[in-house]
Image 1 (tube, rainbow, N blue to C red):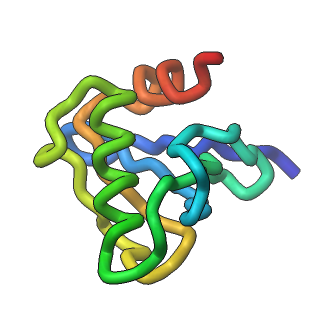
Image 2 (cartoon, helix red, strand yellow; image 1 turned 30 degrees about the vertical axis):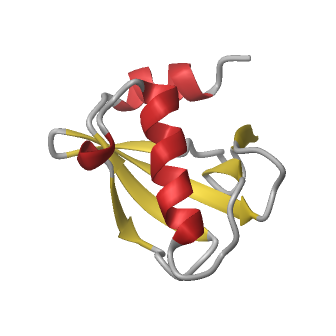
Length: 100
């Protein structure tokens, strides 16, 4: 079996498969799970009334240096596994998010 990346080409940017863990003390990228094809992200907000989703968008916007309004959750708003659109190439997003 081959592994798959968490970033895929999509329209004018890419989609990221995110495995989010809300309720953390701070928001941070934990690492890529190549087997599941997802980026593991801890979220410093509770999973209620969209708080964790808002924090995920804020965190990704800051980390990727893009406007918050340009990031969209395409699927998984009520799930820990989300598909998120960002206006960067898949290669660029992957390079930034996998930096140590």
